[in-house]
Length: 283
Length: 196
Image (cartoon, rainbow over the protein chains, first blue to last red):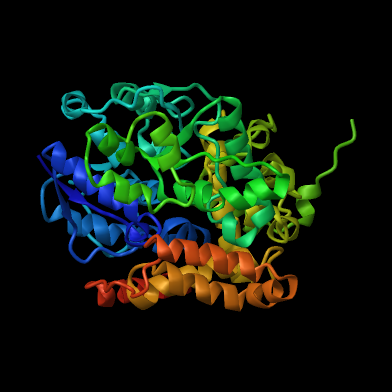
């Protein structure tokens, strides 16, 4: 199986281990991912705040590039996914917007979680599981933009999504219930309004602790970065050591598949997941 | 019963523009508070989301555009998703932010539009976001550098940056986007689009 891939900017930097794990996991599953040549930034959460034209035209160029090859377009970033879907709907819907880029809507835009857990792919996962994630208690964090708003994302379950929870169970882990699956981490407020950010991400960490989870699994580069890189700072402000590793779901797939490279991905985390995984005999 | 029409005192064109962009549904708002109840940032807002909608309908342009709310809204889309009247409240916030910028007046939270402007500049320059240079520009232009030097908080930032660098999370050399010329054309067209 072959798909077009739109990595988004953070995969080159803060979310490097996400990109690396995606590559290896897809290879294991026999999925070929082809990066769209010459892709540009989708405008993320900034374009739509400042300029409506840019917020559609920037992702439109990527849709246009992807349409030259007739295959699904997969993206790992929640914001990229949301912007690509918004552009697709604005350009092909009933009240078509014209940004001077001919997009026909030929490539189906999928977030990588949706892609890997769809029928026809999800069944192939289990047979690759070599070291099940036994006794690992995981809370699934979907964040905002892969589910909301459903008229853009086409999510079937936007209040209580299950795809990640099911995947964790498939990998042999224990998916723990918590009510904050789709609560906001604060996004880019981390840079502009740090107090608001700390409260939002802090309550996610608190709830994960209350749920007695060992770790949080994510599917968005910004969510992972906010939860991981700022965890110590949020904890020390209130005198708590959270010590909650924050995984990309593809990292946990790679771990369960027994991929050697997993250790390298984990070393990129600020909250070191190795002690936890050792204590569970998972590495 | 005595009735007062406060609408007559506002700017009708303001409401027209919002409605043009987000649709007639906005008139259906019956102040159920669903948007405000689910908003994760409501604790820091000066106008709650349902009050923003009411204020727009009542033509209260200055009140809305000078609010803190429009800048600290995290665009999480919870309000839009849950509105029983299918009002795209998050888009209302976008439209208001854009109007605020076009008004040329200072924003309640100047750092937020500054961040977005720096972010977009970075795309215009290289087609993609280079996190390190984008952050550096933002920290200098926002005055965060000066402030952090004063409070000593810079040490924590340097520590965090160093940790990320050592883990290979900070790309030092920006990657090149082959389509940069086309991206710049998009920015030019966006400028023209605003003039029309």
